[in-house]
Structure formats: structure tokens, C-alpha cells
Image (tube, rainbow, N blue to C red; front, side, top):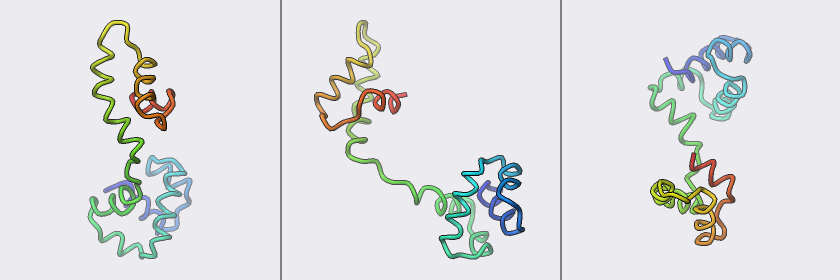
Length: 118
């Protein structure tokens, strides 16, 4: 049984958010997020329970994700080059970020560049 289905089933049985979080091995904020999406959807528990696990994941997860921005895509395209160049002696991330930033002046700053690279 998926975690989302388990959370919704316990909620429909009247369990508290804290007890649901403990039983489902999820954070309270995760439980609140799924319950808010469930309440906003306007569907009943029976309608949502009829979905298979893949449909349930799509309903509560991926459909809410935003597509990557052009800024993010341009940075991600640079990472294969970064991988290759970091193997060379004397090259570090800061040098490669400076190269990236010269090419994309509206790009990410160094800390975010390193975060996404990791």
C-alpha cells in the first residue's frame, strides 16, 4: 500500500495528524500537504482510494511539480562539461562557475550552482 493511501485511509478513520505521521513514518508537514491536496481536490476518499498507486502518486505528486526554468536548463546543460573539466589538474568549481556565469549573466550564483551540481 502506498504511503499516500495509508495516510488518507487513517485520516478517513478520524486519526490525528500526529498519529498518522508516526504510523506512516512521514513528517507532519508531509501529512498536512497530502491532506490539504485531498481536501482541495473535492473528491471523496472512496474516489481517491479507487485509483491505482501510479495514478495516486501522479495526483498528489508529480502533477504539482513545476517544469524546470530556462535558467535551470541552461545550468544543467553545463554539468557534463563541469564533470569533465573537474578531472583536470588546477580546475575547481569556482573557476567553472565563473565560466558559466560569464556565459549566462542571469544564471545562478556560486552557492546554488554547487548545490545543484552536488
